[in-house]
Length: 278
Image 1: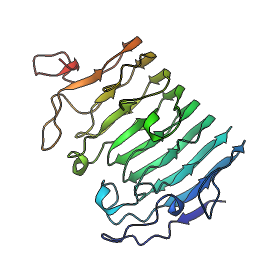
Image 2: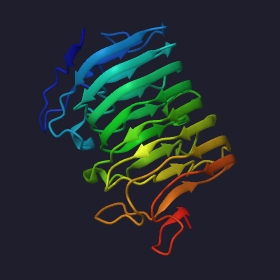
Image 3: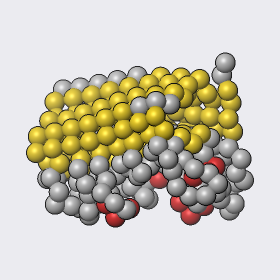
Image 4: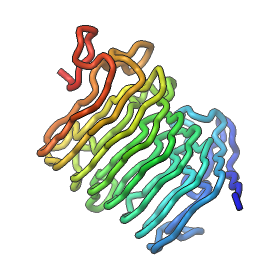
């Protein structure tokens, strides 16, 4: 039957939780103490998960605890996650950490609100995320970080995001950035190849465009990055306060960049919206 897990942190402003080990579910981790050990073919399903964020759906890095996830994954191979309802995390719904994860499948996941990203991919290969609903995220919905400065050589290869719905990122995060996707924007990045974003819908009416940043600060060339048949609910240019942008993609140094069949209201029209940052 369905299990309910609630985080045990303080849950109020000014009293940050312990970082990772306050997550609802830890996979491939050694606690107490630091470090991780690989798990193989683990299945996580049929849980209701609640973090302890005092202001769900907002990003407050000053309060700490953004490492708290509903599901935090250390090292795994063959992980399957499905039939999860998650909310109130100070960090992500799912955080695939930098220690190394491969061959994961996420589906039928319902995210209600979180304090950072829907999913972070820090060092991951062969991941499929599909048929899920991701609600309010306070920063980015999808954050790919093949960031070598975090330690070792990082890889984000062969990741498919398809047939999901996304609501919006929260307006309170706009002073930090925020958007749909951040794809490996550090100055020193590892392999970032074969990323396919297909058939997804953004349903919100504000902070709900396909705003995406790809490889902003490195000379590493990415390969085979595809955006196919996605759609957004908000018209460009966005209005409101904070980090305002009127483009869909800000991208550099890609071999095999495919953008086709997408629907972003206002892009490529006289209203001042652009598919690519001019």
